[in-house]
Length: 103
Image (cartoon, rainbow, N blue to C red; front, top):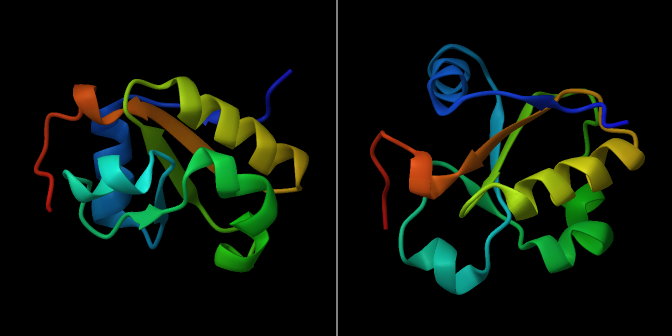
C-alpha cells in the first residue's frame, strides 16, 4: 500500500500558490530543460535513491512530485515514502499541467 497522496494538477497548483511546499520533477535533465514548473527541483528518478535525502532533508515537509505522464512520479513517491517521507503529493505528469511552465 502506498502512503503518498495522489492529487489533481489544480490541487497541486493551489498548494504551490498557498503553502511553502517544494516541487520535485523526476524527469531526466534533458526533459527538465525543455520546460518545467516554476521553482521545481530537478532530481531524475534514477537518482532518487542516492540523493533524495541530500536534497530534501526535512522528511515532514510537503513535497509535490511530477514527471511527464505520471509513471515515474508514482515510483519516486513510493521510494520517498519508504525512506520515511510523510507528506508526499503525487500529481501526475507535465503533459496534463494546464498552467504555465518555464524554460
